[in-house]
Length: 219
Image 1 (cartoon, rainbow, N blue to C red):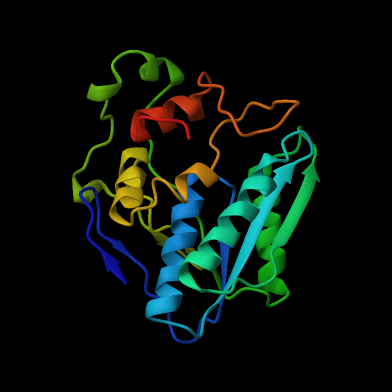
Image 2 (tube, helix red, strand yellow):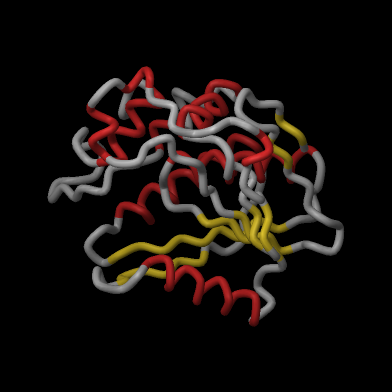
């Protein structure tokens, strides 16, 4: 499946010998749209693959799981695609590296033959710091679009098809597939916690500012 895009061509092409495909779903916009594209690919081009969702969350920030489950449910219903068992690794202490945990879990899943390859919704960032976001949002680019400088979208069994697009590029995908009023509100970018729920965005953290810069709204 090839998707033409203003920032980079996005391509999903899973080899015939790959059946169990892991997809990390954090509850954010990037992993949500990637999960949607993988489900669309399964529905339209490769029904034999099995999509295995993987979510990690901290004990103090359970919203990753809350929104990941909403995303999986919506995509499954929208595209009539079944996801496999949702692997959930929770209650990770705040002082423990999420990146290291993610790598350990992924390695374990390969060793146990649970997945054959996996996808990660890593995107590019046009910002160097949160201060950049408060200056002139409409004129920040910060990412050289010279294709010769694009990063490798596959490393070993790790697939990163969105690696060379930024958050505005992610917003372009939501527009392309008419997901602004359906999938987008089911995602959460904010890293702040609220005692009475997680439906709102603080509007102040780096991730909120990036989300607003790209989509022009929080929810």
